[in-house]
Length: 221
Image 1 (cartoon, rainbow, N blue to C red):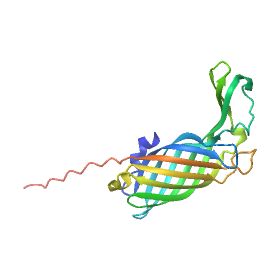
Image 2: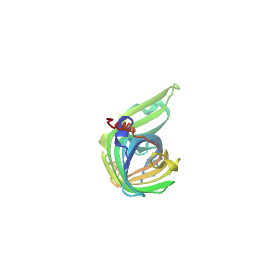
Image 3: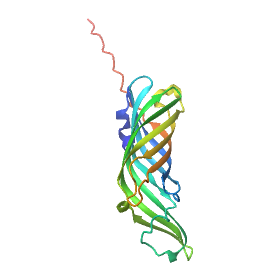
Image 4: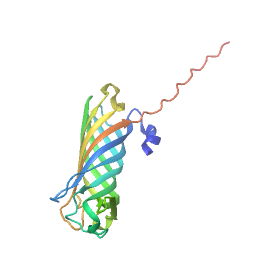
């Protein structure tokens, strides 16, 4: 929403802003039973031109997910008694605010880049989903923040394709991103790191054109 309201103020000849909507697959490394959790992300970007081909592209991902599914082997968090479940699967859903900063090389049709990423977790839930013995759906959520580290730093890479190359920086774009965290994620399990794939649809926000100045009339004698 912030990018939709103010994005045109950050778009000009040297700088182009836009919004990103992403499908994400997130996991935790070095946990043998953990599996990728499908989810989504939302944020914005600003592409700043250094030369014709080299760009700096900071992004602001307001809903940046991490976590994993199939986590029941690692945490036995007190909650609803297991006897109420006929079957259940536990997953970890963490929402972060993250800032990746890409150094990007852009051609007419594709762009690729790499850079650091910084993240802060502001919500973390351990979720139990299942069905009761009576056939009713049941969802139980527990706060997970006591079990994890809130800050994360890592490296991120990206590759993006432009739908309308003739439009330059104002083209719609489809991107693939991968992030690997260097910081330990879980307090109870050393050596566990965030791993995130994102498939991103980028929508540029076009700057409003300034009205052309009316030529001054020459005074007549």
